[in-house]
Image 1 (spheres, rainbow, N blue to C red):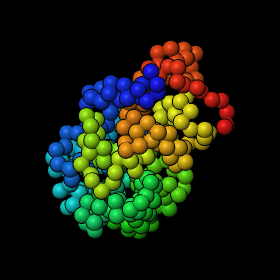
Image 2 (image 1 turned 60 degrees about the vertical axis):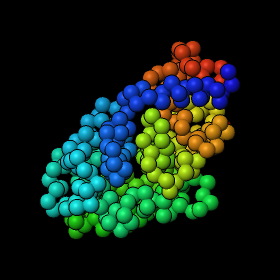
Image 3 (image 1 turned 135 degrees about the horizontal axis):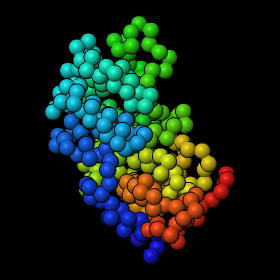
Image 4 (image 1 turned 30 degrees about the vertical axis):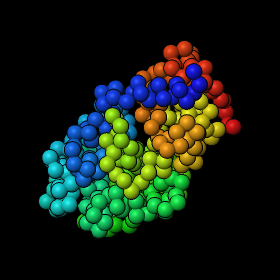
Length: 285
């Protein structure tokens, strides 16, 4: 089979809600789009570290958000509700950082009506991808006054900034791109609902597993992770599906997470469903 056929076969094999443990399963619980926006942003922002730890952290925030997360964020008052997140820790993210995140989302929604309108408002009509929109979105979020959260002396780089990465700094913006994949695409995994951004404009949420498979398939010749690598892997995937290149992200990522990709291991690729198409490189291209 050619690589396109194998990629599509892999995609269909994973395109089931229960195909792999993933934070998107928490987001899928919420029927209303406005609630999925909130839970999805929090879930994508906390999607780093061990899967079990990620799921537990998301569940803890969801308990605070309650059954109507969008309403809770629209009426969020740090003075009254911050204490509920005291002591919460996810890697280097602290409870105060999560309070700041909810405060920023509160302010953005209050001004724009929804996260979709805020983010899509920065998207140029002829934009190839969402890079420019993410830059404007994160810049606006970082400009919000955080003194109600951190006090009179806000840290130079508070933890909440981790949720608002920018392509201009070289960041791959993995968590923001993951959030967009969930909100824009629609299949058995991604619930979708947004209409202001096209699936063709999405960029792969770059992580260790995507990098491994991307290098193995020669989708990228870069040595350093970042926005340029994410864009390069996405451009390679557009050759197989120009309208929806990121449709392959979930299956390729979980292929690596499950140990089927043997790149850099002694076992090699004998158990990989993409066997015969991988051409691992060594060193800097």
